[in-house]
Image 1: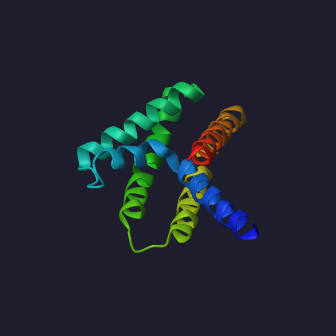
Image 2: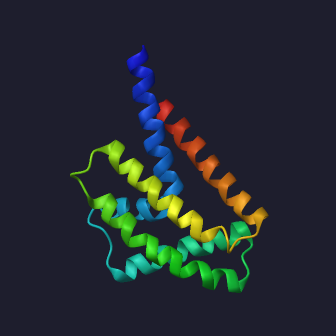
Length: 137
């Protein structure tokens, strides 16, 4: 019983890290059969993620311009991590969490406190939805 609880906790942590990082980029890579995307695909995914954030957080044009390079910097890190099959899942989740925290640290000064709080709520909701999907399996 304790073994199941530990296994579940590790899975929860791993999926939380994935969701925190920006699932749209990872999902798009999965939809390509694990082959990854070319530079144009990467750009399109980052811009799509930026537009989604912009709508949800009601970003100003200036905020969008400040956030764009942060997302472009994050994308290749996520892509490289996603394609690294040699890394154990828990280690991969921890690395994803580090990338996410670094991105958050760069986003926080750009966003208003209310926007940042909304972003954190969105991520928490995504994690909860992923947990529900996992439990249904």
